[in-house]
Amino acid sequence: MVGFRPADVPPTAAVKFIGAGTAACIADLFTFPLDTAKVRLQIQGEGKGAAASHGTAVRYRGVFGTITTMVRTEGARSLYSGLVAGLQRQMSFASVRIGLYDSVKSFYTKGSDHVGIGSRLLAGCTTGAMAVALAQPTDVVKVRFQAQTSSSGLNRHYHGTMEAYKTIAKEEGIRGLWRGTGPNIVRNAIVNCTELVTYDLIKDLLIRNTPLTDDLPCHFTSAFGAGFCTTVIASPVDVVKTRYMNSAPGQYSGALNCAIAMVTKEGPLAFYKGFMPSFLRLGSWNVVMFVTYEQLKRAIMAARQNYTTPL
Image (cartoon, rainbow, N blue to C red):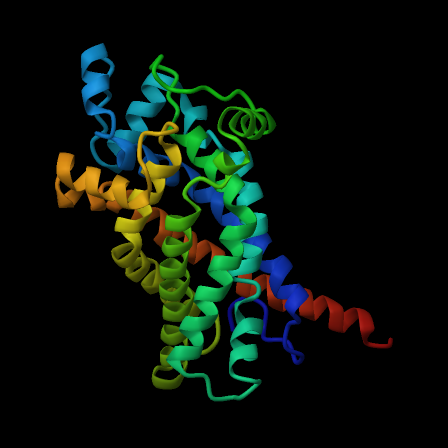
């Protein structure tokens, strides 16, 4: 047995809620540079005409090429630009979309032991939409920080997380903090359904059909497989979400207009810009997050049992 053994008592909703947020923050600390590289690759080419006319176009090539360019031109700290907002996002976002998934799934199945694919998908969509409604401002600020460069005078510059919230609300209205909510709900419905349901299904299949048990190797394999499936399915919506959330007021009339502009100017492959960093980030994030989450649940419940057991 690797790691904490399963507790005799199943974890409560509160344990899952806190555990999911904490595990997601830990995963973000490890994978944030890959997420920043993904954002830079996704928005590359968006302002092609304007950038070229000012001679400030920066070409990012590949995951590690992007990271190297950022470190060389902006310093190593640029890889963690927006980390504070990112951690705020995970603590509110992952707590809801992952921590409440089992509770919502149980609600839809009315506590039945038999859980069909439909109930899993519905639970994923529900917690994903709830999480976006709560945490969207933190996502907007995170993307703005990750997209801004120190080498271009064309970009907006935010100097602190709270200042960014205030500036966006002042210049774009409160609605500016919820910019891109529509595509983000779609994106997270897809991500949640693919990520959580795939993880759920792969884990169940491995436990039933292989020598693996509900332990670290099983969690690792399930999380990595879920990360790959999620990246393939969600990448187009993720690129549109990033472009739209980072856009200036009035640049696009809506998410659909943003998608059409991308296809017209850059072709359909634009929807898969930043695919490799997306996969590396999501795959590694999933592994760190789900393995940590499973172990945290067990550790917390074991501590509670030890605390309540009389000497």
